[in-house]
Amino acid sequence: MHADRSRRRATARAAAAAAAVGGLLLTTAGSGAAAPPVPAVPKEGPATGGGTAPSGSSGSSGRPSPSGIRTVSSGWTIPWGVNWLPDGTALVNERDTLKVFKVTASGTRTEVPAEPRIAAPDSGETLLGIALSPDWSRDHQVFVYHQAKDGNRIARMTYDGSRLTGYTPLVTGIEKGLHNGGRIKFGPDGYLYATTGDADTPDSAQDRNSLNGKILRMTKEGKPALGNPFGTLVHSYGHRNPEGLAWDDRGNLWETEIGEDTHDELNLVRAGQNYGWPMCEGVCAKAGMTNPEHTWNPTKGVPSGLAYVDGALYVGAMRGKRLWRVPVDGTALGTPVAYYTDGFGRLRDVVQVPGRKALWVTTDKAGPGKDRVLQVDLG
View 1: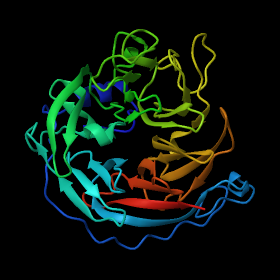
View 2: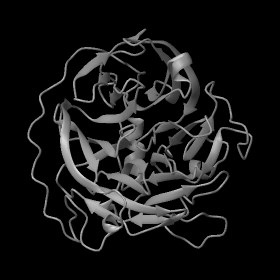
View 3: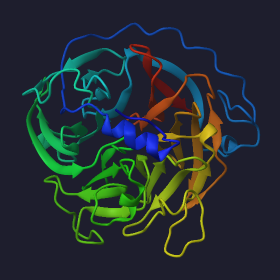
């Protein structure tokens, strides 16, 4: 069970306690579906965004900005993550069905079985992030972040081109709840980074001995990475529900974070820093806390997926139902501009198409079999 935002902590804890018990199930069966027509995009303007950037926005600076959008693949149920293989196809996973698909650039998909089966069907658990080994040509390893009977965990498998095998848990003991985080990505340093939520226990984010409310940094064996600030898996702490990670062309790590009631965040993450939760939501003046670089009102935010392309960060907003483009110059941010407001519903993951000025963006919770994978061209 997973939710984007808990307005009342007591409700969140009750829901987490009632969550179904089980492990991970990666199953197979199914095929691609024909893509329906793309709905009309709302007219552009400062208040709503649109197919091109509003006049005077950063889109006129010569840098690429969204210039067109189309459906690549339809028939999905909460596609949570996209990872590109060297052959130009992608692995895309669904959160609640725990299925993994291989998807071609044209949108044809084939389900990828996992052997052995790790959990019973309909267990109520979820499959969140997936990441591919930076040594793919040598090891073909796939890393997953998922819910299991004993909590959230990070595990490793091997992909032989047709199935996933050799399930091996790497990190266990991450508490689960409504705020799970769940994004995993390899950084330019070759280490695996993982976002973890506070699991509806806010104080865990400030406890450096807890794995919750953190960004973790580890080796491919699940051990603390060289140079971690506390000698543990913890890279940074004080996070509520971080769901997006991306590195810019200078190696800076950016992160999107879902707040509680008033502020969602875009953070510049540095090792050992404290990002404030639960003492702070958004900007605050408490000593020792690191402020976000940008905040959104939840009606325009609840950010999840994050990608960096040619001088800008692209943020998928769920409650806000829009794609944000945020210009970046070093560590300074320009004025964010919203695109496709209310045109495609909740947007979850955002990834660059390798070697192209284009993004794949997944929709979220449109209904069983109604979500899509979209392609946004950057012109």
